[in-house]
Amino acid sequence: MANKVIISCAITGSIHTPTMSDALPVTPDQIATQAVDAAKAGAAILHLHARDPRDGRPSPDPNIFMRFLPRIKQACDAVVNITTGGAVTMTVDQRITAALQLSPEMCSLNMGSMNFALYPMARRYKTWKYDWEEAYLLNSDAYIFPNTFRDIERIYKALGEGHGVKFEHECYDTGHLYNLAHCIDRGLFKPPVFLQLIFGILGGIGADLENLLFMKRTADRLFGDQYLWSVLAGGRHQMNFCTTAAMMGGNVRVGLEDSLYIGPGKLAASNAEQVAKIRRIVEELGYEIATPAEARATLGLKGAANVKF
Image (cartoon, rainbow, N blue to C red; front, side, top):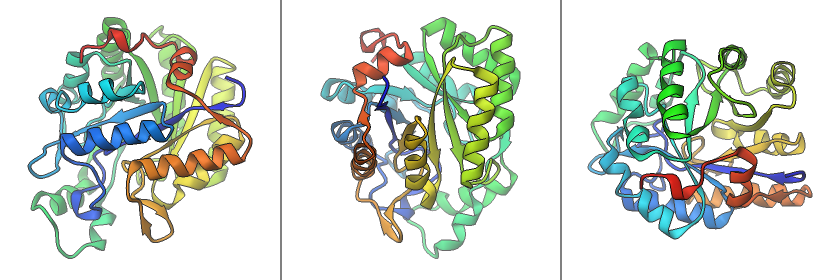
């Protein structure tokens, strides 16, 4: 995989609400269509959340996942990565229900509890498409995203040992790297691990490039050569952080979960548009993008034939 970059695309997430962009996919048909298009544009991994198709609110319902996952699997070869983060309003039981039932190749896993604040975004909008959106954002000043060591162990045993799932370890701050190292010392995860270094979420580490360098150096100290890594950054920081990560030998994640924009002040038309942009940047830098098959081999995944959708 020397000179290869894995592009992940986070299709919808649970941060942004329907009012913010008409391009944000919320129905199963929209999620499937945008996921397949993102894969065709070059995404080797598709990170997926579900939403209630009636009003676009985040949903943990496996039945909604099943309205788009089989279609994605049939239409492309991309790795499906199902969230265990769900939304900060969900319990841990709710957050892992879909993954336990559907047994994907990969799941995201937040590596620590944290404040997860969305409320500043509410100031930008005067009217809303749905009545749940404003309260969802404003109440986040009281949200704690729980991922205790007990939660992490439970998710690892249920999905890692129980289903052969590989994790995208979402690290929102330096302490999350130490949490993961502690868990590895306890035998909970088998190296090499796949890190997703996350910048720019209020409650996590800030989107300063010095922090990216510090997080990378910390990962080197803790994990040596027994890890792979990727970077995502929220909002306007998305593309410059991903570009820097690629230049440093890392992998990248884009998608409308992380940013609704394609450039300054310009909303993205789709997830595929963001994938195509970072692909152009990566290839102009002299790197190649990894295929889904190469991503599977590098990450040691169980293969699409062993999922339950």
